[in-house]
Length: 589
Image (cartoon, rainbow, N blue to C red):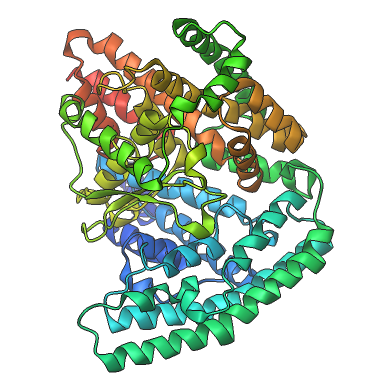
């Protein structure tokens, strides 16, 4: 090669190199991207932001069903994808890579959901804006009522909520036109929820609750001023709108509702359900695969139930044993709601000495047990509501007690582990308290991980000193069966055309829940397709990872370290959790 050719070659190479450099991704401040993402998510979900203690959003409410909101939401998540594309993934730390992957996953699923028509059913009986607003109005939930600004904030939310009801009606009418409506039985359940918010005396209205709980430092003038403003908002804005919604539901919506149970029967329903399955399981498993898994788990757990039935000396069939457990008077010992709460406090006390043996990582957030509010108690399940990240509001385990004399306690030990400690309270509180996570992850939620963790903790009962009573152990099996049945009935209802009655009968044949409880559960699955799948899918993955770690690490396996590794980074899609645990196992620590 001549010098001329060499020089020309080097010149071409340098030009190519410059061109390559111009195409390289410039260094970006990844923290600024995650911070912006958190702010955008709060703006899209201000009620959830309040739940997460983000006070800047306490006076806001979005009209999530509207075309304009959905257009804005689409723009937000398209920008998230664009921002992520500007990041050099390999320059990120391991935890930053987790954040990147989580943001990408969330953006993709949200953009998929926005292509569907779920906004045409903005109200159902289980959760949503109308439920959250009523909970906040009670003055004992996430909405703060400590300052004049707090009271003014909620007045602004009330104003927006009265308009929100109009928007909900507009889009429900569009749903009627497109035959995208709720099942009749669910729409009928919504009517009494609104009826309960109309009272002869404004002082008895749920939205007046905070006025009865003024802070001690409020002056008489301030109290009088807010009392008048709240009374006016209730009587002139809210009650007329509640009445309007009730008339609409009774006269227009319910007559147009469907008799089918699953969303597979409505326009676009099959595609929507597949997205919900992906969203709630964070996997690519199909409804058919999940249905088969559910049938397999039901058969396995039923075998364990037979052992308990034989242990207590019951001679009938398992279905007869279910009925026996449902109606056993010794398992319904309470005469006052306070006694139910006291029983959960007893369980809490019983496990405390053993919690330290399994968990080196424990939250600082305080914890409390409360009865579910009266307005929603008849249709509610036991649940956990997270505390404030700064500890100013405790995590709360809500227990519905609609009829205390029929309250059966056979599953209470297991229920406490799931909803409270070391289930949701540990997982959610530790996530919120973790200063190494960006804010959007402190307040993130993936059902498969979060509910999977809570269901996994039910299996720790014996290690925590519980399940010494065979009926309480049967309660654990019953609750696990309940989650296995969910895999079968949720997919059955929404992808196989099962009726509500078919699903109810299948549940009655395979679990010991009361018929009234099973009916509420089936109607819950009808209202929020796919959510019920998250529990068992997540639990099985965590159990699989624990078994793998024990087999690989042998004597080096430490249950406290395993629990720390699962919990320390907060919720994430299951594939990311598996990747994290596999890395820990490979390190041999």
